[in-house]
Image (cartoon, rainbow, N blue to C red; front, side):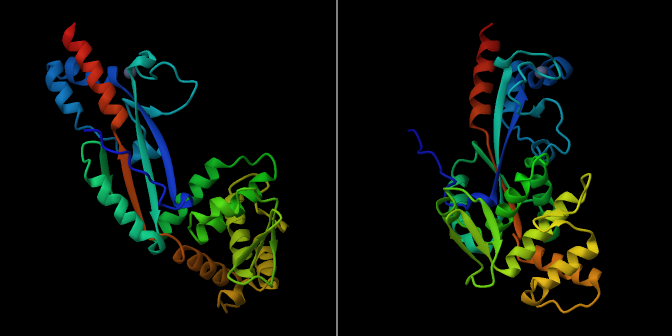
Length: 294
Ligand SMILES: [Zn+2]
């Protein structure tokens, strides 16, 4: 009987990152049949258990027979094998927050009923690590050539500050500008493609922009222009950011550190991975059957 497809839509999209990882089944079989001299049948039963590691998925250390999903790749980077040897893993990473933990648990319960197809794990992470990894992913997803990244980074931070699927509806006609406003209640208000945000949220946006761009040439760029560290702190003070966040440190470095701590602390607290092996298992089977019938 065909099981209904499981939907990940209950999880706020700002909390999910999806990665497609490719594997070359020619390379994968060769390890067992050529190097270890095992029969195709044994190789198949071993390979059925295979799950890529987190470092393969993130790209931190993608190793043979895995490689990153890129549209122009039509031959295996290791053995030059043709596309028909390729299979895909679809990895979903969820940066979990208490606000949608109920939905996450429900989803996981459904995924657990298909243990062959879905591999689940939860790597140990501190909140600071989760924050840094989010910044890294955001950094990779942005193009810094035009100023559009400032807006994209701002919207990412705002969505992340209150993970919800409502954002997709609210912001469906796009955001042209993020505007500091002392009048908004509950942090933000959206009107005519303008997103009005409170000093606390606006300050968080400026902080994130500063963190993202400081590793780049001509770094320190924000909605408030290009700022040195001292200028950043002065600007944040002037908009009432530290006050809004209850930070009363006089020393700029200490104020900055406390602001980072608040930003990190208000963020996700755990990481969950679900790796969908559907495509992989199907292709593996068909490659094995062709090998066997030869
Ligand atoms: Zn290969």
